[in-house]
Image (tube, rainbow, N blue to C red):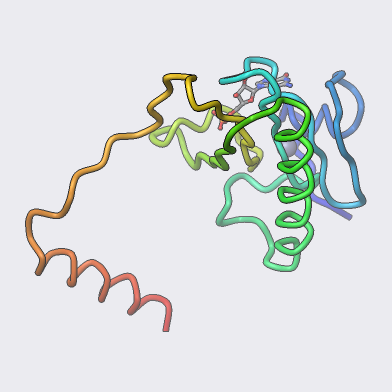
Length: 141
Ligand code: 5GP
Ligand code: ZN
């Protein structure tokens, strides 16, 4: 039995208690239009089970999720005539997560849509970059 959270808006959508503009459903995943799209055709893909963040999603759902993202992404691009597609995923409030049921944004992009999604800057300290890589790698051994 998949985990559910009775206070979660996406669990209510999965259960059919709140309507959504559904585009795809499988045994494990659901995809529907975001109610407030970055660009029209912006889709949310989620595991049906309630997992709060990416880090809580069981690894064995990974295959279904990637396959769903790929298939839905292709359909979104074709229908919207998009030139590109962003896959975005927010974890925790500091990263912009508003709904605590892990989900993936598929955002159709157009060459002239004028969006800048994030700013980047090169490391100013190569040692720091190497230290960070070593610390992260150390937790993954
Ligand atoms: P987050 O910021 O958590 O990554 O994204 C949550 C997304 O869910 C937002 O883009 C928001 O527009 C969308 N959203 C919130 N409530 C609803 C809803 O009831 N229905 C739909 N279709 N989308 C929702
Ligand atoms: Zn939920």
